[in-house]
Length: 168
Image (cartoon, rainbow, N blue to C red; front, side):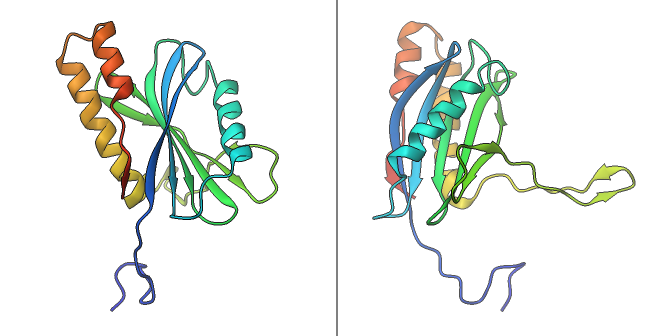
């Protein structure tokens, strides 16, 4: 039975969500995650390139005072998504998508072409995959706990430390 594009041969498998610390860049605080299959970690040079790309985005993808998280997702041998997400409007997750493929020298924004009908793009659009959603769900709950509290330095320290490390 074909389920809306899921090939009959596809068998789902787990990946690991691995917190990799906190990056402070351009006045923003960003929790870093790697998402990887067992035995296939994100290569260190790619992790460095991801942090360099994020540093270069200060003032555009994020601004001083932003709090958020980024998922560096190893999708295969030589394709990686970089998904910075920042909390805006108090309770909204705003995402940018970048990617690295093959022998690219760094990350670039991912802006796939979408069909246009009557002068507007057709919805829906892709957002997060099932593995990424586990991290997003955890971070949504962490952000809710932060918003419900005093939002002082102590609460910020708790939010910074509140990460997910799990098989997803």
